[in-house]
Image (cartoon, rainbow, N blue to C red; front, side, top):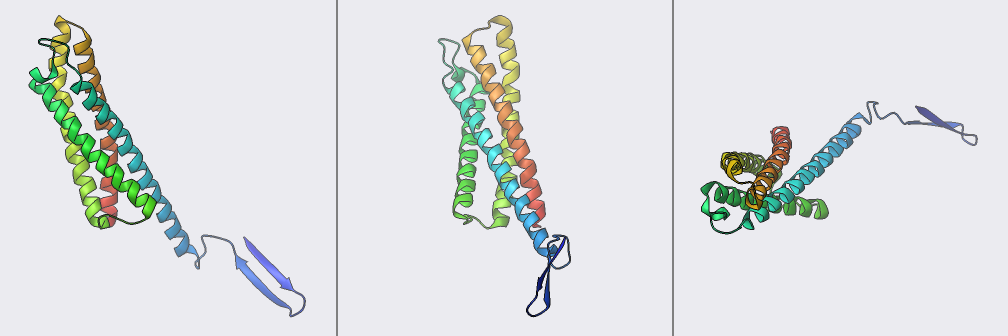
Length: 187
């Protein structure tokens, strides 16, 4: 779109190019699009990690409180202790990542250099996601065997904990995809 302004006093014409795809403003338009994309990725990553934090904390609290008498305590089973420890470390990791990302969004200051943060995000997301799926997968057969004999509050809480861990894995895996994209964009 081309707008012009005529000045009757000095007969000069001023042309203002309002097309964002023109050669003169194409560079700034591309930069604005890149900033918007990076901002969207930061917010998506923060949202996914926030949801992961919620599910991992829920999983941790459910398993930690899963004590229903003799033979029905989570700490009597290695699989459930593993699930509890992984949920705890996932909560710590995602909580620190959420804090770091909120700090960076609010202040505009990076705690780490962008390349260091991208590597930490990618490796951390990958490792924690693997641990989440591993711990949930080891607890499923035990819970299934227990449910065949007795379906009670202990097995229900165990099943809910496993479900929360699977949800945490799903959202952290999506975050890992974003982390991988951000790492590849920096190199």
